Length: 380
Image 1 (tube, rainbow, N blue to C red):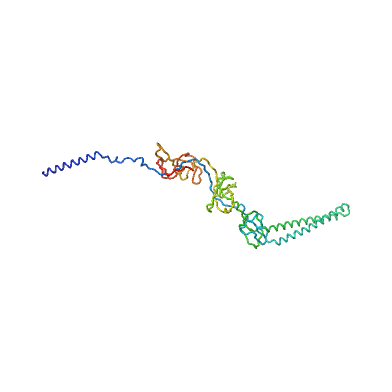
Image 2 (cartoon, rainbow, N blue to C red):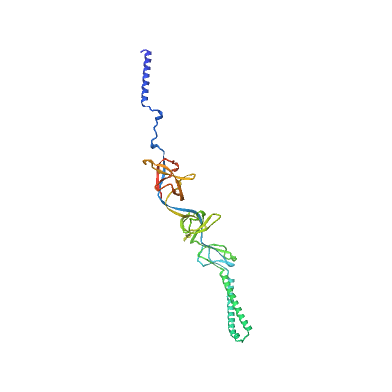
């Protein structure tokens, strides 16, 4: 075949091939802007969350304060006289009420008491003689056998004898008291906590001798902020925790509520009495008190961590099922909060029983997001 004819044939075949390829592409091609289909509903953003279904419950409104343990029976015993001290009860010994726990050298006072008692007996005898003489002389005076001057002398002797007897009685009473003051007795049963001197030491009247403590019952003293002045009453329930000492909490009641506000701390005094038979609670221990202000029934209570705060309002996310209920959505609701305690807060408005709120993952949620519930609980 001539070369020119071969070129014409090759050009014709190539043109036919190109026309055939273009025709095939035109039948199956889609414009580029419509080639990607819309995302299906299953690809919508879904946030995994934990929820809590709200049910009415009781809420205890509690005030938390710190107090210090005191022993109601805690006394420093002092000497009422001077002299040489002798302790009769060692440290740590338990003593009964009225027991002599220390004494002062009483030899001189004992001798003084004996002397005063002897003098009293003499004065009593003198008074008796004067009284008998007066009884004999009075009829003689009435019969004018003795003069008025003589009878007046007899009467004066009786008056003097009576006065001397009275003075002797006072001296005996004073000597008895002075001797008693050399004995230091326990005003209540308790334990010898501290000696302030040494046996054999010379002390003066009024000097501190020992400390006596009874801790079978103790009280916790605390200051409550004045804003709670109308909320705390005698008899209110109290839980005292001593976590720093590894002890279990103890329950009790408010025994005293002060009527005066401390001007420095702006608090009022409360006292809580607790039994302490084993002596585990000791004076000056620190106690964390939980005082019950009020007990509310049938309240909706939610975790504080579930609450979202914006400026002057608070809100939570509630799980809803709009439409056919196949998709669960997050709906934001504004709530009014009441008192809180223990990481939970009362909701006074904005929610109702049966609402399911998001308690974990809510910071990742926006209004209208689809949610997947990982864990669901109910209000306890």
